[in-house]
Length: 283
Length: 283
Image (cartoon, rainbow over all chains, first blue to last red; front, top):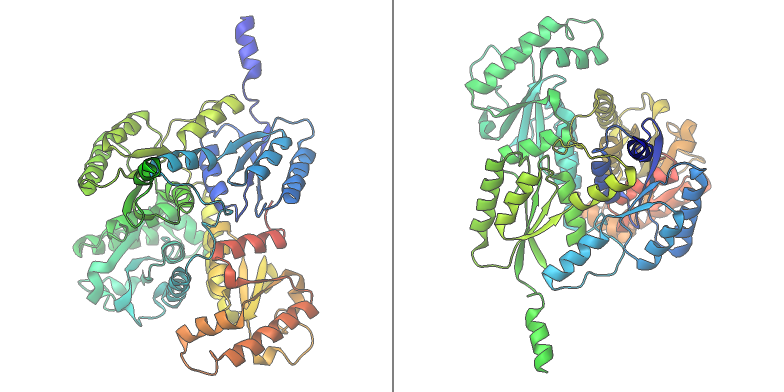
Protein backbone atom coordinates (compact mmCIF):
# COMPACT_ATOMS: atom_id res chain seq x y z
CA UNK A 1 0.00 0.00 0.00
CA UNK A 2 2.81 2.42 0.87
CA UNK A 3 4.35 1.47 -2.43
CA UNK A 4 1.20 2.31 -4.30
CA UNK A 5 0.69 5.61 -2.45
CA UNK A 6 4.24 6.54 -3.28
CA UNK A 7 3.71 5.82 -6.96
CA UNK A 8 0.55 7.86 -7.00
CA UNK A 9 2.24 10.82 -5.40
CA UNK A 10 4.74 10.76 -8.22
CA UNK A 11 2.00 10.71 -10.86
CA UNK A 12 0.86 13.77 -12.76
CA UNK A 13 -1.07 16.29 -10.75
CA UNK A 14 -4.13 16.59 -12.95
CA UNK A 15 -5.66 20.04 -13.20
CA UNK A 16 -2.25 21.57 -12.60
CA UNK A 17 -1.10 23.76 -15.45
CA UNK A 18 2.27 22.92 -16.91
CA UNK A 19 4.26 25.41 -18.98
CA UNK A 20 5.35 24.19 -22.42
CA UNK A 21 7.84 26.21 -24.47
CA UNK A 22 8.61 26.02 -28.18
CA UNK A 23 12.10 27.43 -28.60
CA UNK A 24 13.40 27.90 -32.13
CA UNK A 25 16.24 29.60 -33.98
CA UNK A 26 13.74 30.33 -36.74
CA UNK A 27 9.96 30.86 -36.88
CA UNK A 28 9.00 28.29 -34.26
CA UNK A 29 6.57 26.60 -36.63
CA UNK A 30 8.29 23.22 -36.68
CA UNK A 31 8.68 23.25 -32.88
CA UNK A 32 5.02 24.19 -32.42
CA UNK A 33 3.75 21.62 -34.91
CA UNK A 34 5.61 18.64 -33.48
CA UNK A 35 5.46 19.84 -29.86
CA UNK A 36 1.69 20.24 -30.05
CA UNK A 37 1.35 16.87 -31.78
CA UNK A 38 3.20 15.34 -28.82
CA UNK A 39 1.24 17.21 -26.15
CA UNK A 40 -2.04 16.14 -27.79
CA UNK A 41 -1.27 12.66 -26.47
CA UNK A 42 -1.74 13.82 -22.89
CA UNK A 43 -5.34 15.05 -22.96
CA UNK A 44 -5.71 14.82 -19.18
CA UNK A 45 -3.05 17.47 -18.60
CA UNK A 46 -3.32 21.21 -19.16
CA UNK A 47 -0.48 23.07 -20.81
CA UNK A 48 0.21 26.78 -21.08
CA UNK A 49 2.06 27.26 -24.36
CA UNK A 50 4.73 29.84 -25.15
CA UNK A 51 6.52 30.22 -28.48
CA UNK A 52 9.96 31.80 -28.40
CA UNK A 53 11.13 32.20 -32.01
CA UNK A 54 14.37 33.58 -33.51
CA UNK A 55 16.67 32.53 -30.65
CA UNK A 56 19.88 32.83 -32.66
CA UNK A 57 22.60 34.01 -30.26
CA UNK A 58 23.87 33.19 -26.76
CA UNK A 59 22.53 36.48 -25.31
CA UNK A 60 19.06 35.72 -26.71
CA UNK A 61 19.27 32.22 -25.29
CA UNK A 62 20.20 33.66 -21.89
CA UNK A 63 17.20 36.00 -22.06
CA UNK A 64 14.95 33.02 -22.85
CA UNK A 65 16.38 31.07 -19.91
CA UNK A 66 15.70 34.02 -17.60
CA UNK A 67 12.12 34.27 -18.88
CA UNK A 68 11.49 30.55 -18.32
CA UNK A 69 13.00 30.55 -14.83
CA UNK A 70 11.14 33.70 -13.92
CA UNK A 71 7.76 32.30 -14.91
CA UNK A 72 8.24 29.03 -13.04
CA UNK A 73 7.93 30.18 -9.41
CA UNK A 74 8.10 26.78 -7.80
CA UNK A 75 5.83 25.01 -10.32
CA UNK A 76 6.66 21.69 -12.01
CA UNK A 77 9.58 21.70 -14.42
CA UNK A 78 8.46 23.17 -17.74
CA UNK A 79 8.67 21.17 -20.96
CA UNK A 80 10.98 22.84 -23.46
CA UNK A 81 10.61 21.68 -27.05
CA UNK A 82 13.47 22.95 -29.13
CA UNK A 83 14.60 22.90 -32.75
CA UNK A 84 17.68 25.05 -32.09
CA UNK A 85 20.66 23.59 -33.93
CA UNK A 86 23.65 25.41 -32.40
CA UNK A 87 25.18 23.20 -29.69
CA UNK A 88 26.29 26.35 -27.84
CA UNK A 89 22.73 27.70 -27.63
CA UNK A 90 21.35 24.25 -26.83
CA UNK A 91 23.73 24.10 -23.86
CA UNK A 92 22.57 27.47 -22.51
CA UNK A 93 18.95 26.22 -22.62
CA UNK A 94 19.93 23.49 -20.13
CA UNK A 95 20.21 26.26 -17.51
CA UNK A 96 16.44 26.73 -17.67
CA UNK A 97 16.06 23.58 -15.54
CA UNK A 98 13.28 22.27 -17.73
CA UNK A 99 12.64 18.97 -19.47
CA UNK A 100 14.38 19.55 -22.80
CA UNK A 101 12.89 17.70 -25.76
CA UNK A 102 15.33 18.13 -28.64
CA UNK A 103 13.12 17.63 -31.70
CA UNK A 104 15.82 17.72 -34.38
CA UNK A 105 19.17 16.77 -32.84
CA UNK A 106 18.75 13.02 -32.44
CA UNK A 107 17.03 12.57 -35.78
CA UNK A 108 19.72 14.61 -37.52
CA UNK A 109 22.38 12.27 -36.20
CA UNK A 110 20.34 9.24 -37.39
CA UNK A 111 20.07 10.82 -40.83
CA UNK A 112 23.75 11.76 -41.00
CA UNK A 113 24.58 8.12 -40.47
CA UNK A 114 22.10 6.71 -42.95
CA UNK A 115 22.72 9.35 -45.64
CA UNK A 116 26.50 9.29 -45.14
CA UNK A 117 26.42 13.10 -45.19
CA UNK A 118 27.00 15.79 -42.58
CA UNK A 119 24.14 18.14 -41.74
CA UNK A 120 24.77 21.76 -42.64
CA UNK A 121 25.38 24.02 -39.66
CA UNK A 122 23.23 27.03 -40.51
CA UNK A 123 20.26 27.88 -38.31
CA UNK A 124 17.06 26.17 -39.41
CA UNK A 125 15.97 27.72 -42.66
CA UNK A 126 13.23 25.32 -43.59
CA UNK A 127 10.63 28.04 -43.24
CA UNK A 128 12.94 30.58 -44.88
CA UNK A 129 12.08 32.28 -48.13
CA UNK A 130 13.50 29.40 -50.14
CA UNK A 131 13.25 29.84 -53.85
CA UNK A 132 11.39 32.70 -55.43
CA UNK A 133 9.46 30.13 -57.50
CA UNK A 134 7.67 28.80 -54.44
CA UNK A 135 6.96 32.34 -53.25
CA UNK A 136 5.36 33.24 -56.56
CA UNK A 137 3.38 30.01 -56.65
CA UNK A 138 1.89 30.66 -53.21
CA UNK A 139 1.16 34.30 -53.95
CA UNK A 140 -0.53 33.43 -57.23
CA UNK A 141 -2.51 30.65 -55.55
CA UNK A 142 -3.75 32.89 -52.72
CA UNK A 143 -4.77 35.60 -55.17
CA UNK A 144 -6.50 33.05 -57.37
CA UNK A 145 -8.35 31.73 -54.34
CA UNK A 146 -9.50 35.21 -53.30
CA UNK A 147 -10.62 36.04 -56.84
CA UNK A 148 -12.55 32.77 -57.15
CA UNK A 149 -13.99 32.57 -53.66
CA UNK A 150 -17.69 31.80 -53.48
CA UNK A 151 -18.16 31.72 -57.24
CA UNK A 152 -17.25 35.41 -57.54
CA UNK A 153 -15.35 34.92 -60.75
CA UNK A 154 -15.63 32.28 -63.43
CA UNK A 155 -12.51 33.56 -65.18
CA UNK A 156 -9.68 31.11 -65.73
CA UNK A 157 -11.54 28.16 -64.20
CA UNK A 158 -9.78 26.07 -66.85
CA UNK A 159 -6.50 26.39 -64.95
CA UNK A 160 -7.97 25.39 -61.56
CA UNK A 161 -6.40 22.34 -59.93
CA UNK A 162 -9.61 21.78 -57.96
CA UNK A 163 -13.07 23.35 -57.85
CA UNK A 164 -14.72 22.84 -54.48
CA UNK A 165 -18.51 22.83 -54.66
CA UNK A 166 -20.91 22.82 -51.70
CA UNK A 167 -23.86 24.58 -50.11
CA UNK A 168 -23.06 27.74 -48.16
CA UNK A 169 -21.13 27.19 -44.87
CA UNK A 170 -19.84 23.68 -45.50
CA UNK A 171 -16.20 24.78 -45.23
CA UNK A 172 -15.33 25.75 -48.81
CA UNK A 173 -13.49 28.98 -48.07
CA UNK A 174 -11.01 27.95 -45.36
CA UNK A 175 -10.24 24.68 -47.18
CA UNK A 176 -9.65 26.56 -50.42
CA UNK A 177 -7.30 28.99 -48.71
CA UNK A 178 -5.39 26.24 -46.94
CA UNK A 179 -4.75 24.35 -50.17
CA UNK A 180 -3.60 27.58 -51.85
CA UNK A 181 -1.33 28.74 -49.06
CA UNK A 182 0.23 25.46 -48.01
CA UNK A 183 0.50 23.76 -51.37
CA UNK A 184 0.31 26.54 -53.97
CA UNK A 185 -2.67 24.85 -55.63
CA UNK A 186 -5.10 26.85 -57.76
CA UNK A 187 -8.43 26.29 -56.06
CA UNK A 188 -11.76 27.83 -56.97
CA UNK A 189 -14.96 27.31 -55.05
CA UNK A 190 -18.56 27.49 -56.13
CA UNK A 191 -21.63 27.71 -53.88
CA UNK A 192 -24.57 25.41 -54.57
CA UNK A 193 -27.74 27.46 -54.22
CA UNK A 194 -31.37 26.58 -54.78
CA UNK A 195 -30.98 27.64 -58.41
CA UNK A 196 -28.43 24.94 -59.05
CA UNK A 197 -30.59 21.97 -58.27
CA UNK A 198 -33.48 21.82 -60.71
CA UNK A 199 -31.26 21.09 -63.71
CA UNK A 200 -29.65 17.82 -64.48
CA UNK A 201 -25.88 17.71 -64.35
CA UNK A 202 -23.56 20.15 -62.60
CA UNK A 203 -24.12 23.90 -62.41
CA UNK A 204 -23.37 25.39 -65.81
CA UNK A 205 -20.17 27.35 -64.90
CA UNK A 206 -18.40 24.30 -63.48
CA UNK A 207 -19.91 21.62 -65.72
CA UNK A 208 -17.04 21.71 -68.27
CA UNK A 209 -14.61 20.88 -65.44
CA UNK A 210 -16.54 18.02 -63.85
CA UNK A 211 -13.45 15.89 -63.32
CA UNK A 212 -11.84 18.65 -61.24
CA UNK A 213 -14.84 19.14 -58.96
CA UNK A 214 -14.82 18.00 -55.35
CA UNK A 215 -17.91 18.28 -53.14
CA UNK A 216 -18.31 19.04 -49.46
CA UNK A 217 -21.21 18.03 -47.30
CA UNK A 218 -21.90 18.07 -43.59
CA UNK A 219 -24.65 17.04 -41.20
CA UNK A 220 -27.87 19.10 -41.13
CA UNK A 221 -27.40 19.84 -37.43
CA UNK A 222 -23.84 21.05 -37.83
CA UNK A 223 -24.78 23.16 -40.87
CA UNK A 224 -27.64 24.70 -38.94
CA UNK A 225 -25.28 25.56 -36.05
CA UNK A 226 -22.71 27.12 -38.35
CA UNK A 227 -25.32 29.12 -40.28
CA UNK A 228 -26.87 30.21 -37.03
CA UNK A 229 -23.57 31.95 -36.23
CA UNK A 230 -24.03 34.11 -39.31
CA UNK A 231 -27.82 34.59 -39.43
CA UNK A 232 -29.56 33.48 -36.25
CA UNK A 233 -33.14 32.25 -36.45
CA UNK A 234 -33.45 32.58 -40.22
CA UNK A 235 -34.89 30.22 -42.81
CA UNK A 236 -31.30 29.94 -44.05
CA UNK A 237 -30.16 28.47 -40.73
CA UNK A 238 -33.28 26.35 -40.08
CA UNK A 239 -32.80 22.62 -39.71
CA UNK A 240 -35.41 21.98 -42.42
CA UNK A 241 -33.60 24.14 -44.98
CA UNK A 242 -30.20 22.66 -44.07
CA UNK A 243 -31.54 19.11 -44.34
CA UNK A 244 -32.97 19.86 -47.77
CA UNK A 245 -29.83 21.51 -49.13
CA UNK A 246 -27.57 18.74 -47.95
CA UNK A 247 -29.75 16.02 -49.41
CA UNK A 248 -29.86 17.84 -52.76
CA UNK A 249 -26.11 18.44 -52.77
CA UNK A 250 -25.29 14.82 -52.01
CA UNK A 251 -27.69 13.68 -54.75
CA UNK A 252 -25.96 16.04 -57.16
CA UNK A 253 -22.51 14.69 -56.24
CA UNK A 254 -23.62 11.08 -56.65
CA UNK A 255 -25.46 11.70 -59.90
CA UNK A 256 -22.38 13.38 -61.40
CA UNK A 257 -19.78 11.10 -59.83
CA UNK A 258 -18.18 14.02 -57.98
CA UNK A 259 -16.11 12.73 -55.04
CA UNK A 260 -17.14 14.36 -51.77
CA UNK A 261 -16.51 14.29 -48.05
CA UNK A 262 -18.35 15.18 -44.91
CA UNK A 263 -16.73 18.18 -43.27
CA UNK A 264 -18.54 17.93 -39.96
CA UNK A 265 -15.91 15.86 -38.20
CA UNK A 266 -12.85 17.05 -40.09
CA UNK A 267 -10.43 19.91 -39.69
CA UNK A 268 -9.36 22.10 -42.57
CA UNK A 269 -6.05 20.21 -42.63
CA UNK A 270 -7.77 16.83 -42.82
CA UNK A 271 -10.13 17.95 -45.59
CA UNK A 272 -7.17 19.30 -47.55
CA UNK A 273 -5.27 16.04 -47.15
CA UNK A 274 -8.27 13.99 -48.29
CA UNK A 275 -8.92 16.24 -51.29
CA UNK A 276 -5.29 16.10 -52.42
CA UNK A 277 -5.24 12.34 -52.09
CA UNK A 278 -8.56 11.88 -53.87
CA UNK A 279 -7.66 14.23 -56.74
CA UNK A 280 -4.13 12.82 -56.96
CA UNK A 281 -2.57 16.20 -56.33
CA UNK A 282 0.07 14.80 -54.04
CA UNK A 283 3.00 12.76 -55.24
CA UNK B 1 44.86 7.19 -50.30
CA UNK B 2 43.05 3.88 -50.43
CA UNK B 3 41.51 4.82 -47.13
CA UNK B 4 40.29 8.12 -48.51
CA UNK B 5 38.93 6.54 -51.69
CA UNK B 6 37.10 4.04 -49.57
CA UNK B 7 35.58 6.74 -47.43
CA UNK B 8 34.52 8.61 -50.53
CA UNK B 9 32.89 5.59 -52.01
CA UNK B 10 30.84 5.26 -48.86
CA UNK B 11 29.82 8.93 -48.95
CA UNK B 12 26.56 10.12 -50.39
CA UNK B 13 26.25 9.87 -54.11
CA UNK B 14 25.48 13.48 -54.90
CA UNK B 15 23.06 14.03 -57.74
CA UNK B 16 21.41 10.71 -56.96
CA UNK B 17 17.77 11.07 -56.05
CA UNK B 18 16.71 9.53 -52.78
CA UNK B 19 13.09 8.75 -52.01
CA UNK B 20 11.72 10.24 -48.79
CA UNK B 21 8.34 9.16 -47.45
CA UNK B 22 6.10 10.85 -44.89
CA UNK B 23 3.86 8.13 -43.48
CA UNK B 24 1.10 9.18 -41.10
CA UNK B 25 -2.02 7.77 -39.46
CA UNK B 26 -3.56 11.22 -39.89
CA UNK B 27 -3.07 14.10 -42.38
CA UNK B 28 0.70 13.77 -42.76
CA UNK B 29 1.22 17.43 -41.89
CA UNK B 30 3.34 16.82 -38.81
CA UNK B 31 5.45 14.22 -40.63
CA UNK B 32 5.94 16.56 -43.60
CA UNK B 33 6.79 19.56 -41.44
CA UNK B 34 9.42 17.87 -39.32
CA UNK B 35 10.68 15.57 -42.08
CA UNK B 36 11.22 18.49 -44.42
CA UNK B 37 12.89 20.50 -41.65
CA UNK B 38 15.32 17.60 -41.23
CA UNK B 39 15.95 17.11 -44.95
CA UNK B 40 16.66 20.84 -45.35
CA UNK B 41 19.92 20.17 -43.50
CA UNK B 42 21.23 18.11 -46.40
CA UNK B 43 21.15 20.68 -49.23
CA UNK B 44 23.64 18.72 -51.35
CA UNK B 45 21.27 15.78 -51.70
CA UNK B 46 18.15 15.56 -53.81
CA UNK B 47 15.01 13.98 -52.39
CA UNK B 48 11.83 12.85 -54.08
CA UNK B 49 9.07 13.31 -51.52
CA UNK B 50 5.93 11.20 -51.10
CA UNK B 51 3.24 11.78 -48.50
CA UNK B 52 1.18 8.75 -47.48
CA UNK B 53 -1.55 9.96 -45.11
CA UNK B 54 -4.33 8.11 -43.24
CA UNK B 55 -2.44 4.82 -42.80
CA UNK B 56 -4.67 3.51 -40.03
CA UNK B 57 -4.86 -0.28 -40.42
CA UNK B 58 -2.49 -3.19 -41.05
CA UNK B 59 -3.83 -3.73 -44.62
CA UNK B 60 -3.19 -0.08 -45.44
CA UNK B 61 0.29 -0.36 -43.95
CA UNK B 62 0.95 -3.43 -46.10
CA UNK B 63 -0.18 -1.51 -49.20
CA UNK B 64 2.22 1.31 -48.29
CA UNK B 65 5.07 -1.16 -47.84
CA UNK B 66 4.34 -2.65 -51.26
CA UNK B 67 4.32 0.82 -52.84
CA UNK B 68 7.66 1.74 -51.24
CA UNK B 69 9.34 -1.54 -52.24
CA UNK B 70 7.91 -1.31 -55.73
CA UNK B 71 9.28 2.18 -56.33
CA UNK B 72 12.77 1.35 -55.06
CA UNK B 73 14.08 -0.84 -57.91
CA UNK B 74 17.63 -1.24 -56.60
CA UNK B 75 18.09 2.39 -55.51
CA UNK B 76 19.42 3.46 -52.09
CA UNK B 77 17.25 2.67 -49.09
CA UNK B 78 14.45 5.23 -48.85
CA UNK B 79 14.05 7.44 -45.80
CA UNK B 80 10.70 6.83 -44.11
CA UNK B 81 9.58 9.52 -41.69
CA UNK B 82 6.65 8.33 -39.66
CA UNK B 83 4.29 9.66 -37.02
CA UNK B 84 2.22 6.46 -36.88
CA UNK B 85 1.48 5.58 -33.26
CA UNK B 86 0.22 1.99 -33.44
CA UNK B 87 3.12 -0.39 -32.65
CA UNK B 88 1.49 -2.99 -34.91
CA UNK B 89 1.51 -0.66 -37.93
CA UNK B 90 4.98 0.62 -37.08
CA UNK B 91 6.22 -2.96 -37.19
CA UNK B 92 4.73 -3.59 -40.62
CA UNK B 93 6.56 -0.51 -41.93
CA UNK B 94 9.86 -2.19 -41.05
CA UNK B 95 9.19 -4.57 -43.95
CA UNK B 96 9.72 -1.66 -46.38
CA UNK B 97 13.48 -2.02 -45.83
CA UNK B 98 13.93 1.72 -45.49
CA UNK B 99 15.59 3.94 -42.91
CA UNK B 100 12.74 4.51 -40.47
CA UNK B 101 12.81 7.83 -38.62
CA UNK B 102 10.16 7.60 -35.91
CA UNK B 103 9.32 11.24 -35.26
CA UNK B 104 6.99 10.77 -32.30
CA UNK B 105 7.77 7.47 -30.59
CA UNK B 106 11.00 8.32 -28.79
CA UNK B 107 9.82 11.75 -27.71
CA UNK B 108 6.54 10.32 -26.45
CA UNK B 109 8.44 7.96 -24.18
CA UNK B 110 10.60 10.86 -22.90
CA UNK B 111 7.44 12.83 -22.17
CA UNK B 112 5.70 9.91 -20.48
CA UNK B 113 8.60 9.70 -18.07
CA UNK B 114 8.86 13.40 -17.34
CA UNK B 115 5.10 13.99 -17.12
CA UNK B 116 4.48 10.79 -15.16
CA UNK B 117 1.54 10.11 -17.48
CA UNK B 118 0.83 7.54 -20.18
CA UNK B 119 0.25 8.75 -23.71
CA UNK B 120 -3.23 8.09 -25.06
CA UNK B 121 -3.38 5.36 -27.66
CA UNK B 122 -5.65 6.88 -30.30
CA UNK B 123 -4.26 7.67 -33.76
CA UNK B 124 -2.81 11.17 -34.00
CA UNK B 125 -5.62 13.64 -33.85
CA UNK B 126 -3.63 16.81 -33.51
CA UNK B 127 -4.83 18.04 -36.88
CA UNK B 128 -8.35 16.79 -36.21
CA UNK B 129 -11.33 19.11 -36.07
CA UNK B 130 -10.73 19.88 -32.41
CA UNK B 131 -13.16 22.26 -30.89
CA UNK B 132 -15.78 24.07 -32.91
CA UNK B 133 -14.52 27.33 -31.38
CA UNK B 134 -11.22 27.08 -33.22
CA UNK B 135 -13.02 26.19 -36.44
CA UNK B 136 -15.22 29.25 -36.18
CA UNK B 137 -12.27 31.47 -35.32
CA UNK B 138 -10.34 30.39 -38.40
CA UNK B 139 -13.35 30.64 -40.67
CA UNK B 140 -14.16 34.13 -39.41
CA UNK B 141 -10.52 35.17 -39.76
CA UNK B 142 -10.22 33.92 -43.35
CA UNK B 143 -13.45 35.66 -44.32
CA UNK B 144 -12.34 38.84 -42.62
CA UNK B 145 -9.03 38.66 -44.49
CA UNK B 146 -10.77 38.20 -47.85
CA UNK B 147 -13.17 41.06 -47.15
CA UNK B 148 -10.35 43.38 -46.11
CA UNK B 149 -7.74 42.38 -48.67
CA UNK B 150 -6.03 45.24 -50.46
CA UNK B 151 -8.06 47.93 -48.72
CA UNK B 152 -11.29 46.69 -50.29
CA UNK B 153 -13.33 47.30 -47.18
CA UNK B 154 -12.80 49.70 -44.32
CA UNK B 155 -15.65 48.13 -42.37
CA UNK B 156 -14.88 46.81 -38.90
CA UNK B 157 -11.24 47.88 -38.98
CA UNK B 158 -11.67 48.58 -35.27
CA UNK B 159 -11.71 44.85 -34.54
CA UNK B 160 -8.55 44.08 -36.57
CA UNK B 161 -5.69 42.51 -34.62
CA UNK B 162 -3.23 43.85 -37.20
CA UNK B 163 -3.43 46.09 -40.25
CA UNK B 164 -0.59 45.39 -42.68
CA UNK B 165 0.33 48.40 -44.79
CA UNK B 166 2.73 48.40 -47.75
CA UNK B 167 3.13 49.32 -51.40
CA UNK B 168 1.66 46.89 -53.92
CA UNK B 169 3.48 43.50 -54.19
CA UNK B 170 5.43 43.62 -50.94
CA UNK B 171 3.76 40.45 -49.62
CA UNK B 172 0.67 41.79 -47.81
CA UNK B 173 -1.87 39.30 -49.11
CA UNK B 174 -0.16 35.93 -48.45
CA UNK B 175 1.06 37.13 -45.03
CA UNK B 176 -2.45 38.29 -44.13
CA UNK B 177 -3.93 34.97 -45.15
CA UNK B 178 -1.32 32.96 -43.28
CA UNK B 179 -1.95 34.84 -40.02
CA UNK B 180 -5.70 34.35 -40.46
CA UNK B 181 -5.59 30.68 -41.32
CA UNK B 182 -2.89 29.49 -38.93
CA UNK B 183 -3.62 31.69 -35.95
CA UNK B 184 -7.22 32.86 -36.41
CA UNK B 185 -6.10 36.51 -36.24
CA UNK B 186 -8.22 39.26 -37.77
CA UNK B 187 -5.89 40.87 -40.28
CA UNK B 188 -6.68 43.66 -42.71
CA UNK B 189 -4.27 45.02 -45.27
CA UNK B 190 -4.05 48.40 -46.91
CA UNK B 191 -2.08 49.31 -50.04
CA UNK B 192 0.07 52.44 -49.97
CA UNK B 193 -0.42 54.22 -53.29
CA UNK B 194 0.93 57.52 -54.57
CA UNK B 195 -2.10 59.26 -53.09
CA UNK B 196 -1.13 58.23 -49.59
CA UNK B 197 2.19 60.01 -49.43
CA UNK B 198 1.65 63.74 -49.72
CA UNK B 199 -0.15 64.02 -46.41
CA UNK B 200 1.45 63.90 -43.03
CA UNK B 201 0.57 60.97 -40.84
CA UNK B 202 -0.89 57.66 -41.91
CA UNK B 203 -3.50 57.23 -44.67
CA UNK B 204 -6.84 58.45 -43.35
CA UNK B 205 -8.66 55.05 -43.17
CA UNK B 206 -6.00 53.44 -41.00
CA UNK B 207 -4.86 56.51 -39.03
CA UNK B 208 -7.20 55.86 -36.07
CA UNK B 209 -5.58 52.44 -35.64
CA UNK B 210 -1.93 53.51 -35.84
CA UNK B 211 -0.85 51.25 -32.99
CA UNK B 212 -2.16 48.20 -34.84
CA UNK B 213 -0.38 48.97 -38.11
CA UNK B 214 2.60 46.98 -39.29
CA UNK B 215 4.53 47.93 -42.44
CA UNK B 216 6.22 45.81 -45.09
CA UNK B 217 9.06 46.90 -47.30
CA UNK B 218 11.39 45.13 -49.70
CA UNK B 219 14.33 45.96 -51.92
CA UNK B 220 13.69 47.96 -55.11
CA UNK B 221 15.16 45.17 -57.23
CA UNK B 222 13.03 42.47 -55.68
CA UNK B 223 9.89 44.63 -55.94
CA UNK B 224 10.64 45.32 -59.57
CA UNK B 225 11.05 41.58 -60.25
CA UNK B 226 7.80 40.72 -58.49
CA UNK B 227 5.86 43.48 -60.23
CA UNK B 228 7.37 42.45 -63.54
CA UNK B 229 5.60 39.10 -63.10
CA UNK B 230 2.28 40.92 -63.07
CA UNK B 231 2.88 43.76 -65.53
CA UNK B 232 6.08 43.34 -67.53
CA UNK B 233 7.89 46.45 -68.77
CA UNK B 234 5.50 48.93 -67.18
CA UNK B 235 6.19 52.10 -65.21
CA UNK B 236 4.67 50.19 -62.27
CA UNK B 237 7.43 47.59 -62.45
CA UNK B 238 10.29 49.96 -63.31
CA UNK B 239 13.20 50.12 -60.92
CA UNK B 240 12.82 53.91 -60.63
CA UNK B 241 9.18 53.69 -59.55
CA UNK B 242 9.89 50.83 -57.13
CA UNK B 243 12.81 52.73 -55.58
CA UNK B 244 10.63 55.79 -55.09
CA UNK B 245 7.70 53.90 -53.55
CA UNK B 246 9.87 52.00 -51.12
CA UNK B 247 11.71 55.12 -49.96
CA UNK B 248 8.38 56.89 -49.37
CA UNK B 249 6.89 53.92 -47.55
CA UNK B 250 9.86 53.54 -45.23
CA UNK B 251 9.78 57.28 -44.49
CA UNK B 252 6.08 56.98 -43.67
CA UNK B 253 6.71 54.05 -41.30
CA UNK B 254 9.52 55.87 -39.51
CA UNK B 255 7.64 59.17 -39.24
CA UNK B 256 4.66 57.38 -37.70
CA UNK B 257 6.61 54.89 -35.60
CA UNK B 258 5.03 51.95 -37.43
CA UNK B 259 7.16 48.82 -36.97
CA UNK B 260 8.13 47.29 -40.30
CA UNK B 261 10.16 44.53 -41.85
CA UNK B 262 11.83 43.82 -45.12
CA UNK B 263 10.06 40.98 -46.88
CA UNK B 264 12.71 40.37 -49.54
CA UNK B 265 14.59 37.69 -47.66
CA UNK B 266 11.74 36.30 -45.60
CA UNK B 267 9.12 33.64 -46.15
CA UNK B 268 5.47 34.15 -45.37
CA UNK B 269 5.97 32.05 -42.22
CA UNK B 270 8.90 34.16 -41.05
CA UNK B 271 7.07 37.42 -41.66
CA UNK B 272 4.08 36.11 -39.73
CA UNK B 273 6.29 35.06 -36.82
CA UNK B 274 8.01 38.46 -36.71
CA UNK B 275 4.71 40.35 -36.89
CA UNK B 276 3.17 38.30 -34.08
CA UNK B 277 6.23 38.80 -31.92
CA UNK B 278 6.43 42.52 -32.64
CA UNK B 279 2.71 43.13 -32.05
CA UNK B 280 2.70 40.85 -28.99
CA UNK B 281 0.07 38.58 -30.50
CA UNK B 282 1.78 35.44 -29.28
CA UNK B 283 1.87 34.33 -25.70
